[in-house]
Length: 252
Image 1 (cartoon, rainbow, N blue to C red):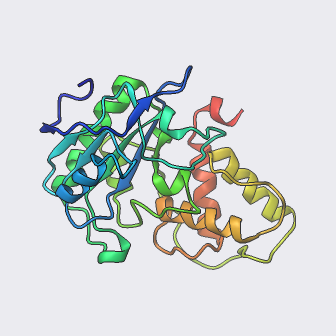
Image 2: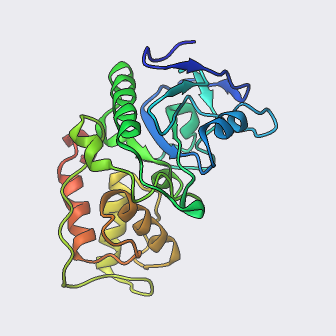
Image 3: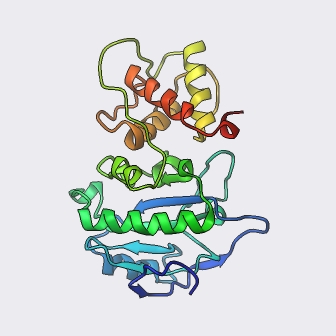
């Protein structure tokens, strides 16, 4: 099975198909399993009735299981969008990270697990030339449906290990903010910045429910100190810092 040399075991999933014509891997998408154990998650991801799969699963002890050949399209992203790409499954490799999720206590991600995710992720992005800003959360590409891997996931630590795009968030504090019900040029500018970074958001100038959902997803990944869907000064400044840190081609 084509993939990393870091995998500890192989459990092939039948829930696969070929990537769409012309699509290449340019996104690494990270999830949590939202299940009690890695064994149960693997069984579900390999069950043809489930109609879901992923390329890799990383257990709490760092064990890596490969389920789908990297040349194939795994069924992990669902209805999603990033920088205009709607077939995320054809353009990505998916890693499931064992964690029971928000509905079942949402424990911390152990150090051994994070180290394995970092090593596996670095190997994948190096072989597929995936840029740091395309290492994403499931909640980034599907903010209306998903919240994983969530605010406890150590994006900062991953970045320090050479994986992903991250900047120091601006500290929480006072100042002007935007929230649901607001409208005008400032809201339009916020929506434009979120869209420029990659989020699927319509630029309307109205801070509607959809805008709040996308801002919440952004906070969950990049400014987890407070996740409330309100675009305060810290949220907006952190977004600006991220855009400023993008390659010039991404903001042209």
